Length: 329
Ligand code: PMV
Image (cartoon, rainbow, N blue to C red; front, side, top):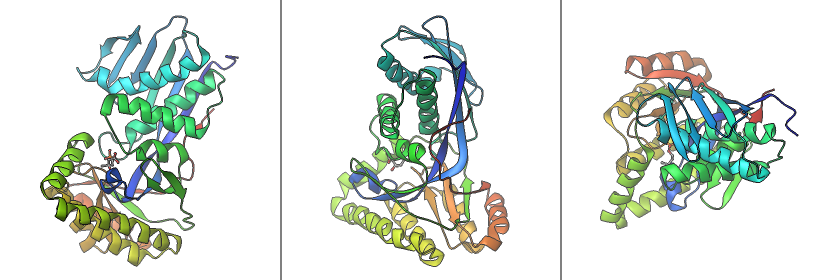
């Protein structure tokens, strides 16, 4: 027991290829882990404090007996660190010991951009802490601890982020029903365009809920159509049919626009990518800012990234990551 001084784990970011928002209403969605990761290093303390430092977020502080003492950061520091603390407590409950830990977070994932940064951090912390304490947690347990810890702070969510960051790869996901791995052999040239407009997933989910309550007979068929797109895309992904995938991405984006979650900056980036030869482009995640994705012909990735930058976005190419949460040392 406790033979390791410090354990580092990492977990990947994600992009939703198809089905964000529709997934909240039970429709299937397709999500892909990408090659940007969050890292968490955990070591034991001599006291019972849970001390967390995130240089990227510029916040640090510790929890002791459920009180939070901030060392630096804004007034939201506690809210931002709470899911991490919740996850650690859930792991510590398993050893039934009151031990303290030091946690250092480093992340290469943009925050509040729809790329699943917060779930990746929590999954990495959960994995590192359990490894440090020599508790073997299954992937299922890590995904469930990550989901519960996030829900305590952010309210309900479909669970798509905790699942993909834990398992990696490409998944067909259904809320409350689990997932199916999709076998995508070829790499897909994907470019992310970040509007750098921060937004809250909860607010966007409630915009959709209100629109659905006001116009159920119009919005419900759109949600159903969103689910059909995801199912059709499985086949196109397995057969690397980029033309069909691009068209399905465009239809998916149009439905999200109708749901009220696009905005002018996302539209600019989506159109810039399409006009420069992308097979298709759509917002990804909750919308209202955050990121869009474009599926590019392999020889056009540079031009499409430049077009997105010219339209005011921050563009970067990503690859899929087969590996979910993992130990680094
Ligand atoms: O937090 P984001 O931007 O990755 O959005 C999550 C996807 C939604 O479908 C909008 C919400 C959910 O819980 O699935």
